[in-house]
Length: 624
Image 1 (cartoon, rainbow, N blue to C red):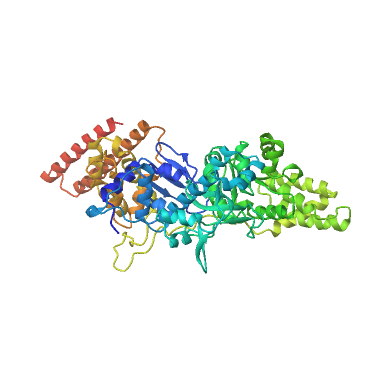
Image 2 (image 1 turned 45 degrees about the horizontal axis):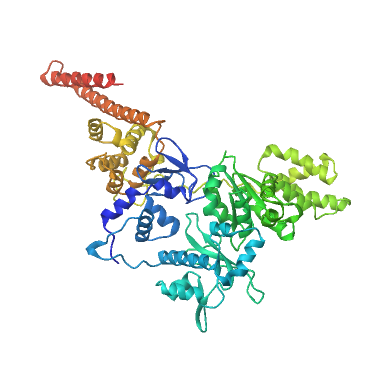
């Protein structure tokens, strides 16, 4: 495969804002001048430790250690090759790539071809919705209150009847049968490949970035013997355990309002959005589970201390009760408070909007109840509370729910609520709740496994020089080197604002730790700190195992409210670094002088050198 020119790779990266790319997957908040912070997409955490610095083009998680540039992020999140990551970003910004030796753009393969096939299929389905054959599909939408504008907004389409309409259309666009099979767009039988979706209303399922990765299809005709709903099977780009319908449209609302509404179907998502509840999403062909929670927590910025809300809508039937209990089992994975909204008469959001209007959908969500209260009521409803046996059975079933309430301040109040619902004295209910609390397993700390910060030198490895397989991190460096860390951080993050002479002098001073010295050397190799991309060159120039440390210094919090404060703080760190070096040199000269005969020529020479250092120290002190 022809290689993309290095100059193009650098140009695409320079033109791409890594904050925008990461921000499509992670809710990022300002964390100082030029710094963004959010929950790490690479491991589960409750407090944000994932830092992004758009100006330097890098991210780093101080929890799990993952780091890199915009290409690394796309490759990790979407399982792309390096070439595919560059090509995707180039297409995003409208940049024409060139390949080495004048080669034409290589035939894109793998995942990129699957994305392209799904984009083409979505357009084919969408265009078919206005065809004469799609009358049943338009009628289905109209009967549920969705007009042509709503269908267009959600990209709803129609899969024609027959066996090969989509297959033939995609073949004519250059897609192979193997590609269509790999993407789940067609199936294979004894007579060859045929369309998977036929005679159905079709919803495109998109990832958080808005890329079509699959479809959900609803049966329309009585002679269709297939399931009522049929989804794309598992493919290299479609994993139902982590896919959420509507997330591409809901992500801005979820991030802004810190509220997500989990509904049960495609039409419910449509109804909620059209009614103004724009944070609604749904799982696709599978129960809402732990991987969905991980995705949502990243998008909504769900961290400890946040005031987020997750509202589930369940049908009041047996299936809805089962779904509620399953969701309650995963409830502690959220830092946000969880609620349940059940419509009157068991109407789902789509039917509620159709029968009572948009305001009723908004009122449904606003009238939410805490999830543990809903689950408690569901448990109690299965017992005959008019009998002693029923009361005791219900108490034993509901006590663990009260004991499991995350906010300990609420437990006494809900213990009293439970006693009232059961018709029992508080003195009978409270001991059972306390016993349930003691029986509950201790909560996991949930912290990410930490990489070892230090390791014994490998055989033949110099002391203080770690093995190349062991990453050196900021946290592993002794506190005594705080000034050196701060100075390097200031140069890496704000080098373009600093006085060149001050930087050159400070970077001419050897660092007292091999890791910091490796970073200093990498920076010193860069001829112009005002040139775009110099930080990437510094990262590449840092020898292992210190490259991660350079990225950490690039992305770590630097105390500054404005660029002017950042500049002043960085310059002050450089000044203190020079002062420390001068004081260290003075101490060494005094120690040497004490070993000499007073009055000797060498004694006087060292004395003059010390006085010269005193002058230089005073001048530096005067610039404070």
